[in-house]
Amino acid sequence: MIDIKKFISNFPNWLIASNEEPWAIVNNLDFIIEKQLESLNNDYILENGMAIHKTAVVENGFVFKGKIIISENCFIGANAYLREPIFIDKSVKIEPSSEIKQSVILENSAIAHFNYIGNSIIGKNTNFEAGSVCANHYNERQNKNIFVFYEGNIIVTKSIKFGALIGDNSKIGANAVLSPGTILEKNSIVKRLELIEQLK
Image 1 (tube, rainbow, N blue to C red):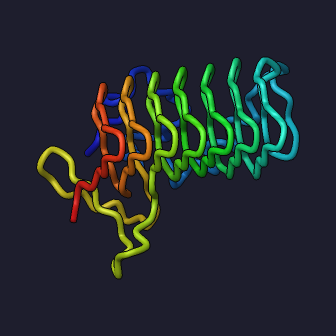
Image 2 (cartoon, rainbow, N blue to C red):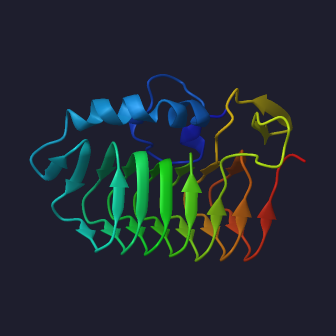
């Protein structure tokens, strides 16, 4: 059992239906976001299943698809591509030409330009340098099921798409690759060009 609150301080309770593993939260994110959209106040502009806070800055050329919540004081750079379901917490920066899919990115985190983050939960104050990838699917394997290695145990996620759980205050270097099922503790550092592959 992975306790997500050991990785992310004050993880929003509304994102957790029960004591769910991180991949279960990601897999249920469509339902979770849809429910949260109903409780938002007039500080958000609601349109076509999307909610953008009035203080958020969204540059030209973006593409948003489906259920997405962008919170206060966020910055979304030009040509960003966001695919549902997504929750972006307050004061998050998504720089130009990055793609985010079915993920949670928590407050004060920054995703530099030309990044991909898929099916992941990103903790607070986390920084992704340019060109880093949070992969969510094993294209090269016959068996697509994702297994997580944590505290000496192999955990079966029963999912074919899960990217990463990244703890608060982590730093991901430019052009680094996090393989599917990556689990990073708080204050982790991934070097530039490094490959994180927990299971061969």
